[in-house]
Amino acid sequence: MSHAAAKPMSSRPGKPLSGTASVPGDKSISHRALILGALAVGRTHITGLLEGQDVLDTGKAMQAFGATVERLGPGEWTVDGVGVGGFAEPAGVIDCGNSGTGVRLIMGAMATTPITATFTGDASLSKRPMRRITDPLALFGADITAREGGLLPVTIKGVQDPVPVRYATPVASAQIKSAVLLAGLNAPGQTVVIEKEPTRDHSERMLAGFGATITTKTTDEGRVITLTGQPELRAQTVAVPRDPSSAAFPVAAALIVPGSEIRVPGISRNPTRDGLYVTLAEMGADLTWENDREEGGEPVADLIVRHSALKGVQVPADRAASMIDEFPVLSVIAAMAEGDTVMNGVAELRVKESDRIDAMAKGLRANGVEVDETRDSMTVHGQGRIPGGGVPVATHLDHRIAMSFLVAGLAADAEITVDDGAAIATSFPDFVPLMTGLGADLG
Ligand SMILES: O=C(O)C1=C[C@@H](OP(=O)(O)O)[C@@H](O)[C@H](O)C1
Ligand SMILES: C=C(OP(=O)(O)O)C(=O)O
View 1 (spheres, helix red, strand yellow):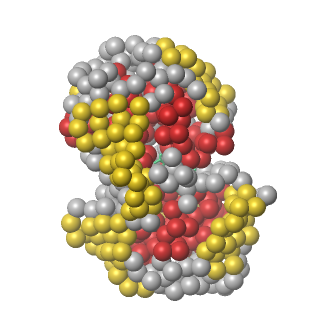
View 2 (cartoon, rainbow, N blue to C red):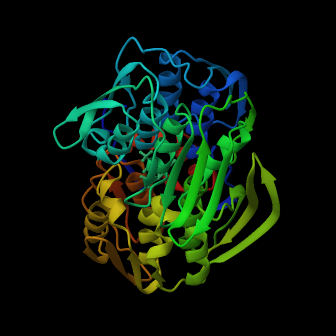
């Protein structure tokens, strides 16, 4: 992704949306399936893998560390793992492209093996904070150098005889938690992560699925996750469920385009990922869940969404982690609602692929929507309409900013343009055909 040419895109109001939106595999689970597959003994077989650039970059990295990663067909992959502690030293630099999850989890996975690796990424990833990962990895004994400010490129000299770590995450972040747990895999004894707010628990679920001993207890300190180090992970069959964060885009479009009704099958109902859906219900969204079931160790259901008259709400800070990637598109939905929507406790949005509070506020204002922001909150003054017709929105290599504004244009009074939609391929390569298949006018 590092040198992709800018790709201006636009969307405009049109007919109601209808049909089935089969969104791709979950990005978080896809990264973890490749990484744990690489650390297991035997051949892991994955179906429904997200073939977005972020995940493909993680697959390439696992190859560079000595695993064999092969594509059998669409979404169907195998990983022949090297076992915990079996990573080989990569011959070249590990380029994680646009992916915070990829780079941070892989740093954790290699830091307790006596090999050296250098990590880079694109212009967006190169601005994102890495000390939050390198600080706890240094506690295991890894020797780490970073560019000034704790930024990429980062070089990690993994430690031969790591010590286990007890670490309280300073911010709610599944990436920090997961990096520490993955490093703890090759440390003797028990590695403990404590998080005040629950964050997505895919690492815990999948580590248990691959045979690790891992427990989670809720205490006064928060969630205490304890992993017993040096397990033999055994290869698994992983069916990746569909991504609720990708589903948020067609769901949002159906809610705000008059006359729409769509079906979105197989959406995760994992409580660590469902904050957007809780919020939408409070706003008055017409959501019907059907066929509750389990897929790939995750609770899922099918969702039917109809266009709805929505009202603004207060989103509490303690819900932020469970919908952290959905705030950009929520701010579009909020603009189409009546009244103010206040999103609290969202400072982490400032260190994603872009400063998402700033990017959404500027793009919405340019398209006639009033927005206020503080360091860790954003308020959208909903007026039941988005005028649109603004100058092209700057997306800053951020897929979710691009998709959010393309959804906004479907319900705006006039066309909305983004300066660059190339980054959409990092998480949702078939976004355009999926949306046009529902009847949307965008591209
Ligand atoms: O662990 C993960 O797979 C992710 C965790 C979140 O990041 P943080 O841990 O930085 O909040 C999220 O924003 C990202 O898209 C995926
Ligand atoms: C923040 C995101 O991803 P990452 O941190 O993996 O780049 C995202 O997909 O919205």
